[in-house]
Image (cartoon, rainbow, N blue to C red; front, side, top):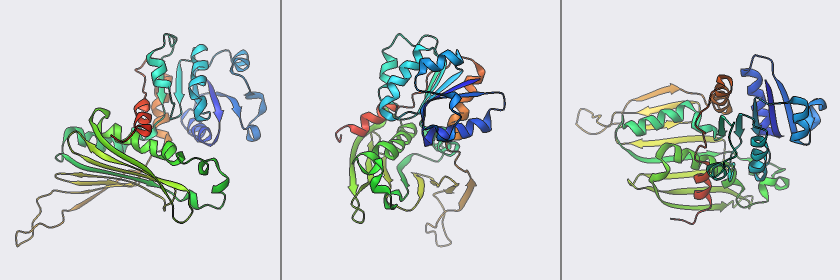
Amino acid sequence: MNILFYGYGNHAKRIKKYLDEIIKSQKTYCFLNKNNKNIDNKNFFNDIYEAEKKFKKFSCAFITSPNEYHLSHLKDCIKLKIPYIYVEKPAVGVEDYLANSNENNGIKFIQIGYQYNYEPGIIQLKNMINEKSFGSLLRLDIFFGKGIAFKDDFENKWRSQNINSVSETLGSHLINILIFLLGKENIKVIKSLNKQSEENRFFDTYHFAGFTKDSIMFSLTASWGSPLNQTIKAYFSDMIWSYDMEKIIKNYPRDCFNKEGLFKYPPTIIERCKKQGLRASISSFLKKVISNQEYDFEFNNSSYVYDLLYSKDI
């Protein structure tokens, strides 16, 4: 199996780590435009067509180059008829291009890597919302944060140079989770803003909130100015559900009373559910590669994420 990495930064290194763990059969990696300090130069190429001369064909490709190159690098992979292509999010323009292109013959599957759509805990929540197994959803809160804006070298990093960095990187994940859980057709009213930190003066926090057409309230916060925390909390009419990427906590049923007939807090049920991270997304992609079958492309609402990210408040 010949595997192409188009770009090789930290995200690609994490993907390769999982590939090494998951794929037990023989494999060969090809790297384009990579930082070649830690990799044998014999498989390093500056040009995809130069790489093709040696490898002849690739089983799959991972497009992990900087965001602005995702679409052009996808087009390169399509020209070489690489059958399975994984595109790192945000993949701006990819979904629209493929919807209007006649050049993707021979491409069996494309996946855009919004990894949280493949997390078992988040899939559990989506099923409960759809099935209304614990009543109707009233409110959804998502908070993802870590304090990288307070690191000594943050000022010199690319994340500090753009007011929209936190929304484009971390905030886009949260919006994607929202769409995955509630459906893009249901989002009706939104308000978003970037918050400047009073301590470090960077725009390190992004808020996105609103309502669905069924009056479900949602509140998303992505922050580089908080302690490490990843929490999703859903308020149903018959249960409070929360997930911190380590465990799921369920408080139900609603109708719990004391001896005086007054409401009391419902019992707490705890389920271990450790976040799989990239592994779940990569595993799903590799199963399709190994099967050698055609599948519906998984765009994971990438186009609509950016529509919401850059739209005026509605």
